[in-house]
Image 1: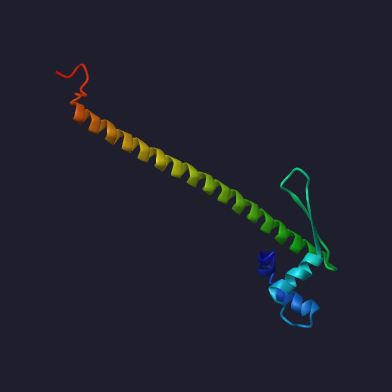
Image 2: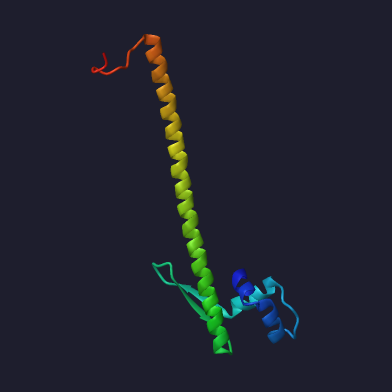
Length: 125
């Protein structure tokens, strides 16, 4: 909600409109905003219903749209973080497997030298 407050400059706008010109602090604005809105998750979805109460329908629409955009950005950020975490796990696993393969290859090379195994194919003279 801090993003909504910041993007719409609600600390100043609501301070002037409802609190005699006194600039609000973000926690105060957030409490005021919470009292003027209702968020309802839509069952079995990642959607939410947003209701904003205001005497001015344009302010209500602006707030509801800002909340929706912030929620969308949050969900996109969350999805991106999950993807990045999944990629990191795969990269770590790949790195670990590659290190194990290199260790095994070194071991095989050392055994060939110790045992004098010639690794040339049947076509080699």
